[in-house]
Picture (tube, rainbow, N blue to C red):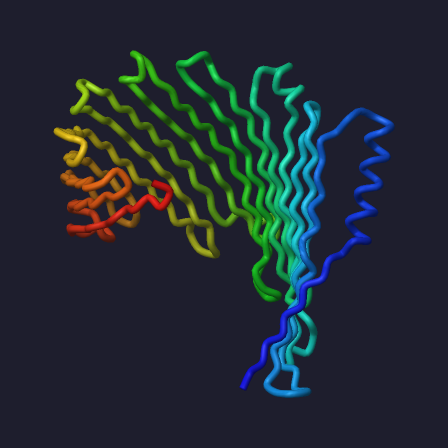
Length: 319
């Protein structure tokens, strides 16, 4: 019979030391809005019987929140350890998630700036994951909003797995006109994947455009297009593929309880062979309550490129 024992301890020494350092900085510079909630030090022991320890787990962490008009910083640190009889060495994993922005710089440049970073690694199994994502967002009156993102990812999933690096950027644009009756959105993404930081193994370029026009309170038209080009580079010839899809349709909501949508799609796909196809798709939704929805979907390429029907339900727990 397995027996589990849990213990939780506070770390007042760590909390007080960090707090004193920030108070000193506060007195030398200017008032800062900060918080350092230390997470509990949690240990868990799993035993097969008295004096027969089989597994031990340790969890701890620390959060840092620093808020000021010039600099706002959020840091979340987590530590986990695990030791059991089946493993010769203990497994220790650490993760840091951080975000950074500056209100003063955003006001000066009239943009929204953001920087997010993530680092996680596991000692004993030689695996890690690093990610960095800076972003810039600019609003053009009430007409449109432009966002630029860049993402860098470096990871290794196992000791014998190769190190993979992914670099990519994205541009997103959305907006509205005519008192919100006309809305549109578009995105362009470009991603490259490298192995051992030098060998290019794949690349993807994707463009997507969507628009919607509300003709009446219960009727709207929609247009969309999507283009994707992919390339995979291996030891033999590269594998190239491209997909183009164009869609036109309408939506009708005769009441607050029902909604009907129908679309015509044109697909042009080029892989080893070229395939062109035009097909229809649609959906019927029923809203018996504001927080409950039942939808029946039909499409000639609904399930893995084949025709089919699909029923799904959405329930809003916050409703």
